[in-house]
Image (cartoon, rainbow, N blue to C red):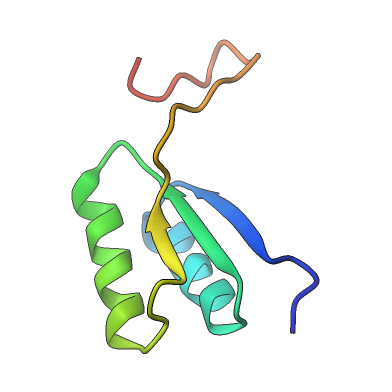
Length: 74
């Protein structure tokens, strides 16, 4: 079991989506953030099919950053 109970996964492409599923498999709750609703929906669907019910959800908020290069759909 992981020491973390909840993590945020920023980016749900091939790598981020796969990592989100691995964390969920280990019992960690994952909050997803991605400009693509479809990408997040696909990861959540895979998680539900794998039996990780309720472990992977969309982040319901706005990400803020001090870095000018990071601006999620502003």
